[in-house]
Length: 211
Image (cartoon, rainbow, N blue to C red):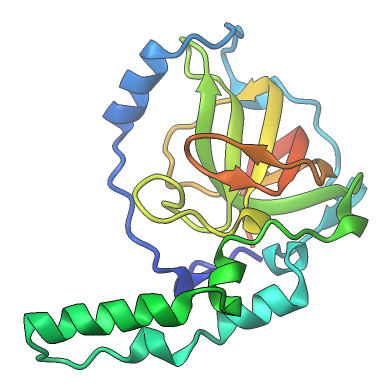
């Protein structure tokens, strides 16, 4: 199930990314052109039973999940009404305390579940476009567990981001809509200017998200 408040402890911000910006970006893309009139007819449909349905938590080692669900006390050590110099001191103390602790490590963890490699999975998420053609057909994207990740809010931990290749393309009417994405998962690490993904997936099919 896709949790609307998934990984809320990372500090999710609302997305300020408009469809106009998405359209403008697509016009400047130099990705390979892919003809499309209806994205959902581009993909080979397979029954959901052909794929193992996953929760996002299942992609993260248990100790990483525990660290994120139990953030350290220094994150809450800011008193209301503090003077500016006191706030600066508190921030400095927080940064010092944060060095090498498990919470900070979990925020940037690339640790994966090795058994997931080669598994056919079905997982819900939001799409962050990476590559698309002049017709706005998306061929590469990050799949993330919550809306707005990687654009105007910090990215999730790398083991909570999936890099997806969709050779036959997918079109979006809005970035606000979640989807079920199905395909073969691998533990290949992908890095770019936007984020790092600890998992990759070759998409076989997709569908609108319903619980």
